[in-house]
Length: 307
Image (cartoon, rainbow, N blue to C red; front, side, top):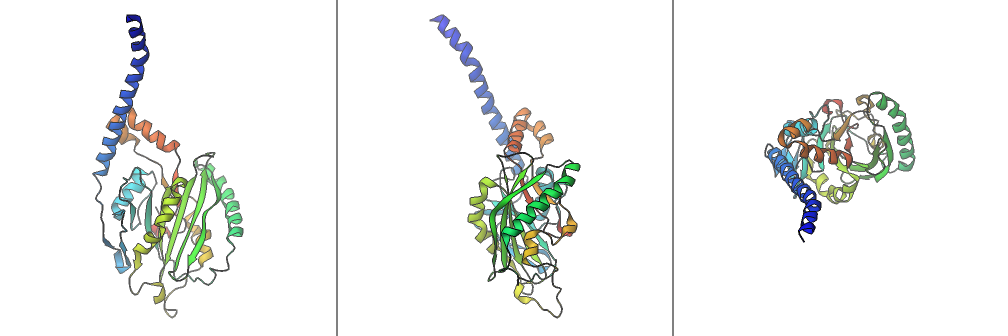
């Protein structure tokens, strides 16, 4: 019997120790994430945008981070080179910045976008052209050390609501040679008198359904003030944008911005993490990276608003 007990202790001890280590790691990770969350101040209710542009009525189930805090998330935590120029971001109430999918809000004063072509666009033909252009741009991306991007297809085919002057579409993207974890690039454009309100969703393909479930209330939450609405356009004094609905979807409105203008959720807290909890956080970050890069193209927004 003693031999059996000794044998069992030899076999089970490493298992028990490993389990204890994993529990301890999990606790340290959660403590670190909780500590990080406590450094942010979220808002609810009505948010007024600068220059009397419009308002955001934070939807039920969401919370808002102002532009300063959004910059910190986009740049310092998600690893983008810049994060300035946004109007803030909204994310699910029950998730933190390290786990949440989010809508990043910006404004592009590109001029009044005519929607005359909305019903005439062949989006299947556009898809083929965009896939070709993406492949061509990969040469330059790889020279600069970035992963190549494959435009897999429409995750949600472009749709324009003429009554609400709102456009939305989604792309499925693959980064590098990762065939398992594809990225969701969900775009919403709310047309105004002199420009476009841009809502870019930062999410994964696995979150497509939940993003789509919230699209209607998210786009309804952003409202232009009187004088800035699409219907307020005055052809005698207002500038007309160079591109129409097709140009917004194709991303050609501001090609000057460049192919690398992306919002990338690629957890970048390694230094803080190691200091906070040693290898446990590193394992968590590594797992996040391996689970898929979460990216949203921002090539359709003005260079003054680029992150």
